[in-house]
Image (cartoon, rainbow over all chains, first blue to last red; front, side, top):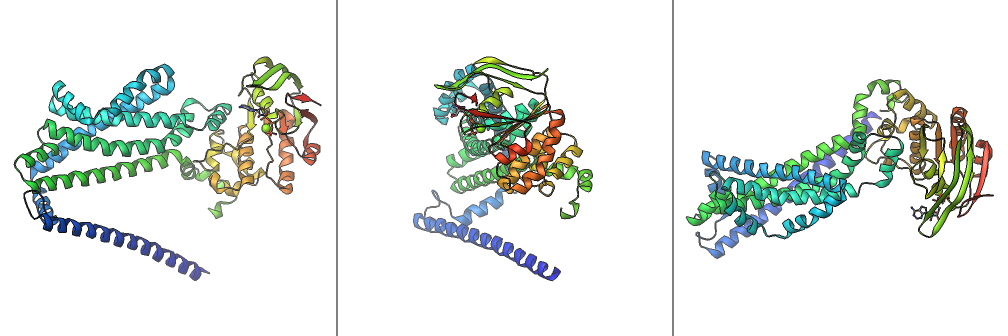
Length: 289
Length: 195
Ligand SMILES: Nc1ncnc2c1ncn2[C@@H]1O[C@H](COP(=O)(O)OP(=O)(O)OP(=O)(O)O)[C@@H](O)[C@H]1O
Ligand SMILES: [Mg+2]
């Protein structure tokens, strides 16, 4: 009996292993395929001044990571864009709550939302350059990109919360905090996660674009801009690679942790299970758990 | 003070569901409501529970009462397991434990609604209403999808409730009505009328 179970377990593990190994292999293949395409493009274009090879970019990247200024620029960009993102997130959440709470507020601010979303980022960047210092431009632009997305998604999420569940909560006299925790938060969290993931990508790109135009000291955008003026194409490629990698890592990291938070908030049954040993011990089926 | 509904009117658009409808209810016992689909039973109960506003008329004797309900739908929180769903309305673990046992749900305490069968979900909704407790239990077809044996197991617990509370039970099942009800009100409609 035990042996049989063990075998089953082993075969399950080996299956999982095979699956993940298969996935990594596929990923490696796809990665190599595009590196080869890149290399072929480089060979066809054959002008170092406009197009760099994978090897050149990799080499330059390795050089970069030993330079202090590169790290300072990366941190600088992350900090400015992160600040703009957090501000946009906070404002978006606040505006969403106000819009749902008050119909007049929603109607009044709807045109502003549409206007911000329809305006090209470059218009905002150029306007902001006239209005404020270069560091503020970046924060402001990221804020402008993030806020409407969070706002609109959250309003939709709150509005789509199941009426029947809310009515149930009312009947069972759940207080406001409980309703938020047990019903609103779990139902809006998918909307929030998708909004964060979309706005993070958009905000990051817009932030870098703002940095290219406003060139604050110690920023990836300024580095991009300078490599363009000095025709350092390898740098241009390498910085772009850094920006892409950071964008992917950031999104993965933040969305993953949001999912974890969501699990923590919504699947409170698991928490109860954890916290209620005393309850368990008296339940007749303890042996089954 | 007994519970009464007086001259209540309620329409949805052009459909008149309640027309000068009046009803007196005792404070204890099981009152069963039975009638064809769409005659207005749920509407009546929702007005009684204060979930729906009547167009006119009044409801007396419910203001200081704790009302518990099994909705016509299960309305379980999909992101919480059964235990979480019950804890949401009752902080006392011993009460939860007791009713889980009564409804043969103990072994599903940690299951999420989507992991339960239709009948188990129904029992979970009933369990929530029972653990919450109350002076008035409004049970809108609480045994939907339960087999004979389970029903017979649950009846005594419903009877227990009726000692101190009013149980309003919607049912279409003859055997259930005779087994449980102290008073059977046969209805027709819309507009809702007592036959
Ligand atoms: N929110 C609503 N909007 C419009 N019409 C409604 C609404 N709720 C109920 N009705 C109508 O009112 C009538 C009575 O509905 P109700 O749900 O009270 O019936 P019921 O007696 O509970 O039926 P069943 O046994 O099928 O549950 C039905 O004809 C229904 O179409
Ligand atoms: Mg009904």
